[in-house]
Length: 274
Image (cartoon, rainbow, N blue to C red):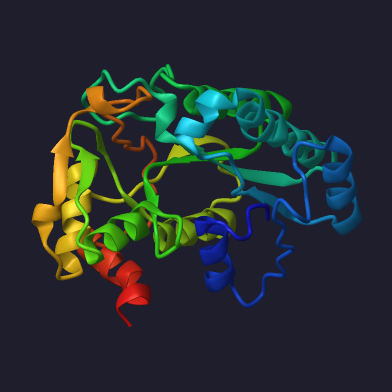
């Protein structure tokens, strides 16, 4: 597994089934943009499956450093897919709702045509296309707005601002499905265990559609802080264009457990309120 120190990788390690042996890597132990390093790692350990949770996720940063975004989100994914295919291994990869342009205003399903608006979304789509071409049996899971107690997460930023009594400006006209990292990690483990022949694209997100503004207010309210500190702005005040509606749904009839948004926020905030 790549991205072992990220939000998803951290929760996969916590929820790991007892009969799994996990080889956990991060950017320090495996540079996925280096094909030789990828091949050495996979050939050396011969795992049953490759799970890629690594990615360049800084949307604003991608606009200023597109080379790095494409290196990690496209070339890195392609390297993993090629090596996995060479050794006859299953591969599972995480992608994003930002591959869509947000103009549909009904939930996007797997067969909808992608049309990313920014460099981040374009780099993630490039990774999807290249990896599926190299390894058609792999599975790509698109998700949305992952949150947890991670110190660099949106939830942590909102809580810290509100706790310090600082006003936080949050966009109110972009709708998505916040996804609890533990739910996503559990879904990935379930897909690996129970649906080994599933291939192509599948969508998995939290169960409620919210604006970032409403999500931030829920975080602040759950923490018992003043929701008046959350100020609504519109997307014209953001430097980077993002999809206004990126709610995902799935064409697959696969039941994967999802926590209520309230329980997921409480669980994530417990690290700060303990």
